[in-house]
Length: 303
Ligand code: SF4
Ligand SMILES: [Zn+2]
Ligand SMILES: [Zn+2]
Image (cartoon, rainbow, N blue to C red; front, top):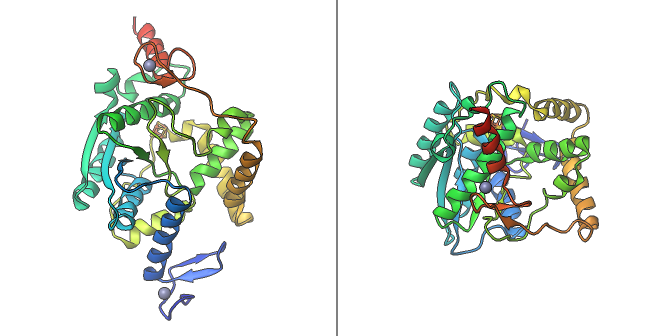
């Protein structure tokens, strides 16, 4: 298989573009598409400080590496934020990987932990509870990232969500019939107390992100979180992967179809105004934020 742009051997074949690319042209293509995503959604402005959520997994490693390259000539400051949820036998290794990539790229890094922020590790939150581990994890991670970003004076929080994650999120909300949450997947306008979130790799297939890490020789921890199999997302991911192998392009069309629909529904689903949580001051829809609601449940269970 020969590269469509030169005479080198190709390492990837993109069914959606019809291109076969060698190592050099793959890196060029990946970074120019990420640049395009950032540019067309006006994600990053000169003079901004961007908090990059870096867990040490492949997506966030690729994100930090890619942003360092594509923003090298711009006046943008990156700071890595790593959240330690406290997942034994898993998170310690990914945190080592996160430290290593931040050091390699000379990016300042801050680590925040669930234990320090909320008084419990994720492992201590979940036994015997009706709430799924990923619910605790997602709510507290978002809360911790937002607080850390504000503390660090960041203008945006960048996360490593990829095309597969986006397609799964769209499908999960369809399956739950949760149109409200589905519409929250649109890029949002600025809200008081909430550092805007950006997803520069949202158009990149997961496989290309893994390849990007591999060809750039950046180490990533590839083990799966022990709680991952307990989530609806794991089933949706398997279903989407099966559909993608039978009907290439399914993930892209899932996301693109949602975006078309979201543009049409723009007026009908206006973004909700957020209030400040009465316990912690973080933004929330009702009077109490989800993190404080879950903390209340955890505390009442421990007595
Ligand atoms: S799989 Fe669930 S518990 Fe594990 S890191 Fe992801 S969200 Fe957290
Ligand atoms: Zn080439
Ligand atoms: Zn709160």
